[in-house]
Amino acid sequence: MLKLSITQSPLKEHSYFAEKTLAGSLQVVRVPGDFRFLALSFVTNPDGERSSQFSTGIDPKQFEELARMMMDADPQAAVRAFGTALQTAEVQRRESNTTQVVAA
Image (cartoon, rainbow, N blue to C red; front, side, top):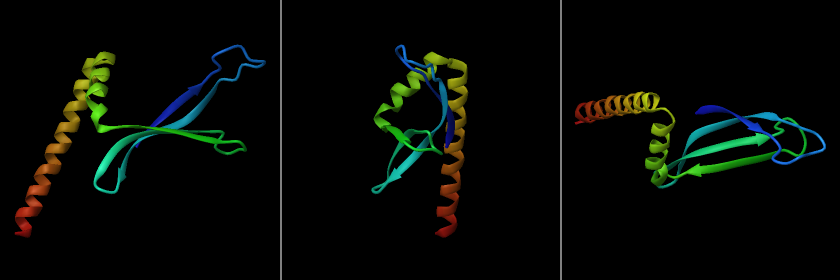
């Protein structure tokens, strides 16, 4: 889970200016049938009355565009992130293959 700070600010003039920082998260959600997606969520006023939860999903079909956006934002950080993710996937693949060989 990736913890995020989300800022809430009024878009138009209000009788008061209330900028708030809300705790949010980006996490992997698994649903039956081995389907997974990313979910971004946050709660307004989590410890008080009149709280609301907001959430949205990022479908795997959108990952390609997400990767392009990451490259646009910071190419070096994006390449490091992709490299780390690929190394992690390779280690997991090797461990999976080793487990299958031992089980056989």
